[in-house]
Image (cartoon, rainbow, N blue to C red; front, side, top):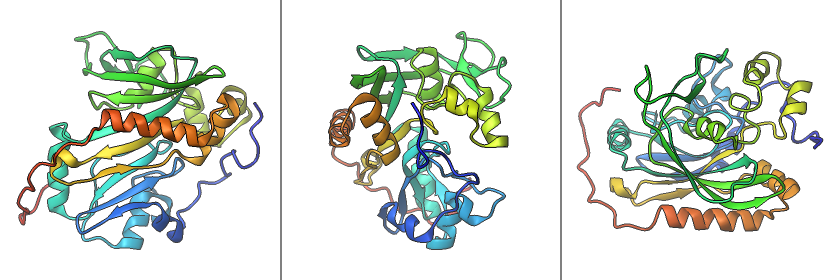
Length: 293
């Protein structure tokens, strides 16, 4: 597959356009700011100034009293990301994360055709064989650094040698979906770190997109998207959704003959099944004391 010019990454990392940032807002109230993050944007502040990261741009445009990411997304992962605008909300949701009260639904494009749902119950730990320290891999139970990790991959559509999968996380480990997909031999499409050659990750960081990337990767970013975040068990009556992004939709239409509307219908069905409506818990009292992060 030949990538056309609009699919290729820019020569230099783009900066956030303030007007576009406001268009990414899924929810804003006194406590929360929820963003549909694009797949090219780093979350945490970078050396390239405030407009090069989501955190920096949010501070410039919204000027919140406080800013705390309830959880993070890798730069190339798109979708729902929740920011607390007060220390009280941040502390409350941080506690909910530890208690596994916050529901998440991801979708991914995987290499190969997954015939049926698969549960991967394999611990993850550092990958000493990789030349990249951030890489994880499946490791033996009880080995140094091993952490329990359970992921369920649900095929939603299968065609053309690829799978649109809904992903259910029963634990929350670093790079869990990508590392488990690699172990399953159904790697996330476009993954530079867990794909055909981990060296592509460092090469992209230092040189940008190269001919080797074009030869080995059919997509310029990892095809992973956070489709929904469910805060209802925390007492906040929100099920927050981010639509199927345009770049992944184009790939699915070309390579899987999967229309965007049909993909969105399948994703919505997966979210409804895995994050069913529940009565919200009673609101916890507001906390006026400082929460130490």
